[in-house]
Amino acid sequence: MSKLTLDLFTSGYQDVEAKQYQVLQGLKEQYDRFSHNRLYPDLADLIRLAGALEAIIESHEDLQQRLPRTITDLDIEQKKVVTQPSEMEFPELSRVIDFIAWALPLIRKAIEEGTTIYNFVDQHIAIEEVGILPVYREEGYWFIPDLKAELLHLLRYELSLFSASNERYRTLKTVFLESLEEHAVKLSPESVKLSLMKKYHDLPNPATYRCEVDIDFPYQDTVLPVAKRKLMAHLVA
Image (cartoon, rainbow, N blue to C red; front, side, top):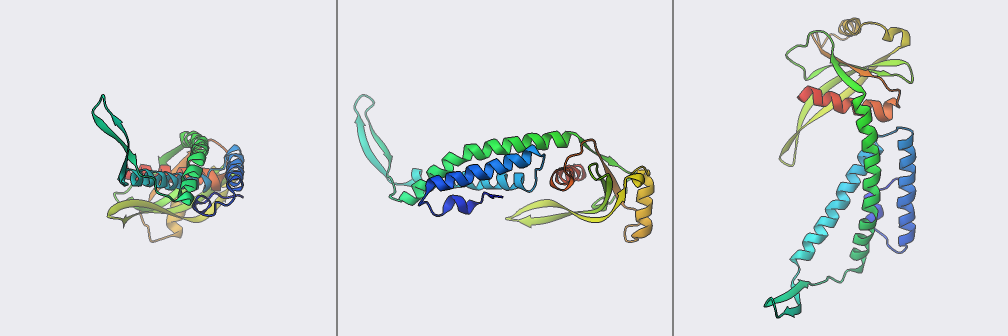
């Protein structure tokens, strides 16, 4: 896959047309994955890339405003001097900015396509509690179906807090435990929870959730990451 990276936009501008082709080819392959309802990790990568490119544009505009201003005209009627920021002579930087300005609308359009699919998947996933929930819900079990493979995946989750740049964030870590085949999926969620409690003794009264999913989209690339975000939102609500 022609992966789009920040380095593609910030280095080597001997052949701009070749770089434009790389962007168009990368986005074409991305749209193809979206057409097969495959979202991750590509959608997240595109969002991070767009954010980095927007930061470059904003930093450049801020720099331009801070440059010494040059007198360009005298407005007699308004009785004022017309000025504009002095231009820095960095042709390579100008090419970078022009290229980013050309590519950003295309990247944003691809992100909109992926976000539309994400929202559709999110609407078709529901988080349900299994049994009576304990007071401690930072750790527990989570059941999520894979309709394409006719499996029910059993996972363990752990909600944790970490700090970065003086900000505190929540993160959800999941660990795969096992999968049940189609005939076992018909078991009640309570019986599945009970079997896990018998097998793993470190969580004697675990918080347990299950996902109701009514679309057979790709599990690893789409259903799991969207459902994981939805479970995290449910836990921190």
